[in-house]
Length: 313
Ligand SMILES: Nc1nc2c(ncn2[C@@H]2O[C@H](COP(=O)(O)OP(=O)(O)OP(=O)(O)O)[C@@H](O)[C@H]2O)c(=O)[nH]1
Image (cartoon, rainbow, N blue to C red; front, side, top):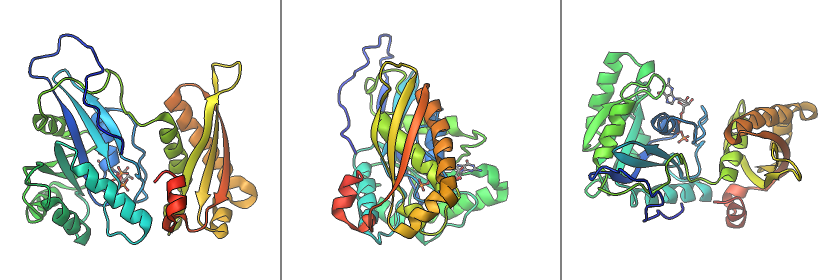
């Protein structure tokens, strides 16, 4: 991830003397609801979410602007036992994030039993929890009854020692503001790190690539989600126009058989992916978008260091 800025670029006046600023991150197994929770705290869609595990690959930050504090949330990939070079790289991103933040939220969904994946994360977190406070966050309480939530709170207590455990729902907003307060309480005093109104420092092209990947993930199964990577090659206003942006993107898969699946019969599937992605990109950028999307095969890119670099990992 990019380095954390040290200075105030804001220049805003009337900051309270005890203004705080700093960084938080959420950890948890894939699909625990970390991205959705980030979006709920920030109040807009900055991290892509999907029902497929391992959707998040970049440390995308959301920025919560409050009168008393600025909280920068770093959204990490799901932590899991690495099986490929990509898996190892993703875990490295997670570990280096932990050493840079002021507070960590360990997310476990209310509707799934605490399992080996959670225990693995708890073991890793125990290494940093002396230095960095770790909150237990029981997510998705809207899909669980009170007894299930209570049971999960108890199960969390047996995982590791938490500074606090809090149940939340990103969907109905239950205790999202309280979680924001708890995270902010752990931040050091300091001025805002980012200008007012900025919601993420992720470059727009990365967000655009993530939106394309999100659309491509819809309805694909098995190992294919993990084989898809998207690179935006070019993104610029069309010459002489200020109301239309051309986006040229490549969608990479690992094998030619996967290419067929992504394209669909006569390219029908890719067309649908393109128009779904275009609508999201237009919403993000606030202008009309022409999206040129091609599928390419990068053989076994998840295991190839050179290809991984090229794809931005
Ligand atoms: N009902 C309900 N669903 C939720 C909530 N939060 C997340 N989800 C759903 O759970 C799924 C996974 O959410 P994400 O936010 O993508 O999970 P993540 O932990 O970021 O996943 P990775 O990026 O794979 O690590 C999505 O289908 C979300 O819509 C919640 O509070 N309530």
